[in-house]
Length: 202
Image (cartoon, rainbow, N blue to C red; front, side, top):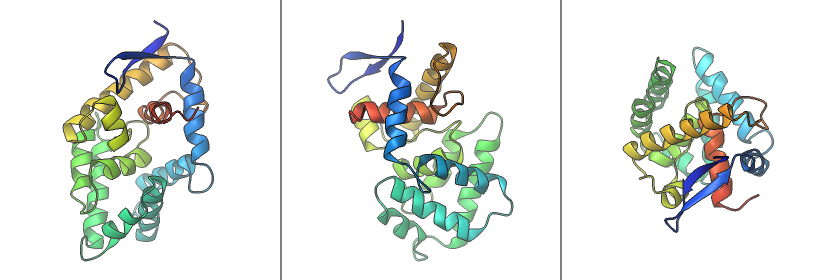
């Protein structure tokens, strides 16, 4: 087989050819360019998880920009409102999620549960933050992907979706499909390509 089977909204099996994935990922990347775009936010997420101690100003700006990237900037206002979440709580939960994903094997479910304990973050926006902290492990699962691909927007749904994205990434790498990012395919890249496919961005 030279493609990946996808369960579409019409409940029939659709095959996305391997060769389509690079252009689909490019289409997604082109929708989110610049200093607050996908690649830039990945770099900032990596800096947050590796530079200790974490600086609040950097974390605050990261949360704002991830929510803007997710087309709902207002979420950050709820998250950063001190009546909803104390600064120490946000720092602690993000720090705990980083530790869980730094473990061997990485604990995606534990990290997601931890992030959803921050008031204002459901599965969708919690997974967006994880995606930029650890793109090598974490895809995004939002309402659009959930609705079209039949993964429940829940912790269990995320577990299944992340495993599926990893499997697809492994398959693309084994097929030697070159990524436009010049790295091995990651679950986050597969999810971006699927999102572009669903939205017919290509």
